[in-house]
Length: 198
Image (cartoon, rainbow, N blue to C red):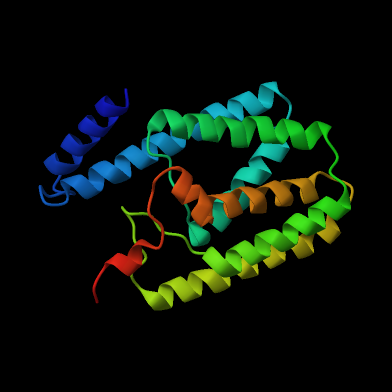
């Protein structure tokens, strides 16, 4: 189904002069990413409605997507792996948040660890998307740390909800995604910009 969507969309774009043959690969990658995003998000949100975790799941998707947009991090090497991770993060984790209370001491410890991880490793690139621009890397790091700080400060305004746990898991998951050990476990090189000559 994904191939049919991408193929028909590309043909339409080329037919209407919105895409040239040289741009075909870029548009194909964008369309594949868009299809993957829409299908996975739809499945996750539908499941969250049945599991009665919709507000938690939606909040987590929003917070994580914004943070991920600047901190980046590892990507699954196969679509099946991506599905496993997506369902684990956005279906199982919200259920844990709903039914398990995490002590404040653990929350504060992991908040501190996450901030340290962002200082050390954010933003984390991939071989297919190396972050070559030093100024952009520095800007992304500042934005990542600013967002994490805003998330943490906002926890004090949502004391009677699951918000602190949502922030906890959001920062923890992103910390794992940018950690060099995670890259090593999946045999994916990190700091790919170092392999490019100026």
